[in-house]
Length: 69
Image (cartoon, rainbow, N blue to C red; front, side, top):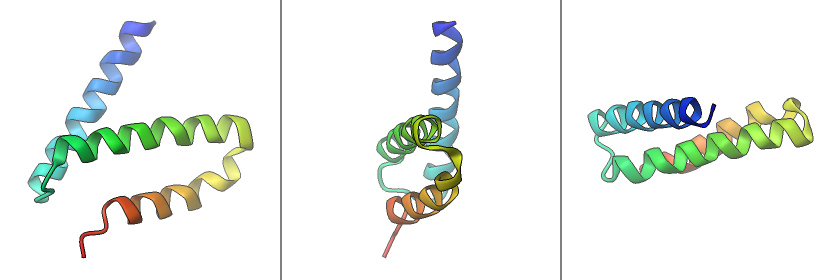
């Protein structure tokens, strides 16, 4: 089971990293790692606190993380 989780997280990270690099992110690997950690935390938050708050948290977190002023 753990191998499947690791493989999925690696695929997710690599996919995000590639998209971020194509979009010109200055540190795509770091940003991808942050997004994966954010995703992990949001899953846990939905489990513990209920899923109702997750959509607003996702929008706010991604907006702040990817803000490129």
